[in-house]
Length: 122
Length: 385
Image 1 (cartoon, rainbow over the protein chains, first blue to last red):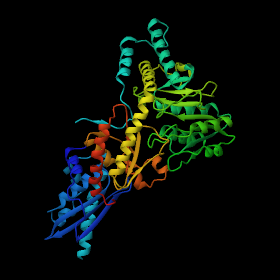
Image 2 (image 1 turned 90 degrees about the vertical axis):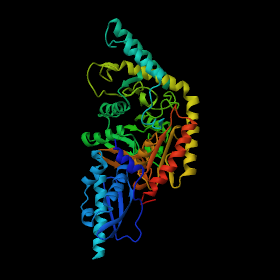
Image 3 (image 1 turned 90 degrees about the horizontal axis):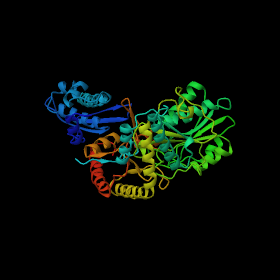
């Protein structure tokens, strides 16, 4: 049902937690199933220095959040804010059609965290 | 990896003795039971014996057993057949909020499409229906009451003897979906005042695709499919001879072994539940504390999604299920868990472990080793816990 990459990111998720003194906090949810993901980021030198997540959700939602934080860290702020659901899906080796909303939620949470950081930075 | 199968409420593996009986039919008895020739008569004789076995297991007469393609068809036949047969008499059906979709979706469709009036009774926090609610719901226009014998998700056993007596007093047909209980509990229609009872072979170590509806003699009844007039014109279609033979064999074995097997399962289930309670905080055990199926452990683990638990357990070699019905991608919390008063959030963390003949003490130990680790790992990633 899931790719090896999804299983790996579900079983050993990267970047669990909350960034201390985060520059930005974001959240996205899936109204259909009640799942939600919160992402916090720290920015430095025009890049995403740190990104962490917490997810209440299914295995695919957890794997997607783990993957999106992995993709974001080290990228320029501009680049990271453009990470899409398609990018997450590609990096995970795909998700079943009914779980693609999980990738959308992960990308949405990251984007809102970076947007929040931009607003706070003025 | 050795697998531990704890999803017997979904389906049970076919007993090897049953599989052999089934294979023998395919191998040696090719006839159609409606044919006059020797091959036909042989198939008919095998089916007659199976019918006697199924009837004997529930205290019925062979002529009161209608073989179907499974529990869903038996439920449809009971509900649609009764409503059609009694249309001249009334149009009101009483059922409960925790029935299987085979009943709930059927009565809902009848309400929408045939103007049937419907009363869906609530349950208490253990999932029990109050028989007095049934009494109050019955009107002069009531044609059918349908209450399941035991719930497939939370394992609660319903007071169907009392409900049946009320229906009999009021002269209303009473149907019970006994798919989860036949084979596990004593079900005897000589003592139990039910008119219609649904059975399903693959819940008692028989094959999938065969079940039966018990129809008490004299119960108003209308067929819902037309054709060759099989099953005394109550269910058209060439009978699934091998499946029916297997169902008879499976039920005979389950009935014979029940006195030893059910207490054994209840002991293992209790070990599992007390181990889970000791090792994991914030766990809700669903269903009635004593009036419950011997093999059912239904839990809700706060802060995590049931699907995550199922996938993590599966990766650890344990087959379990969630109360949440996953349809077309949307994980809707189970209607049963919402009916017993759980919040959507708690209901989403549901986990159902249902034990069976192959389950051992060692299996329970393995689950008690894996589950707390999985829960703490998932909770570490959860914003709720």
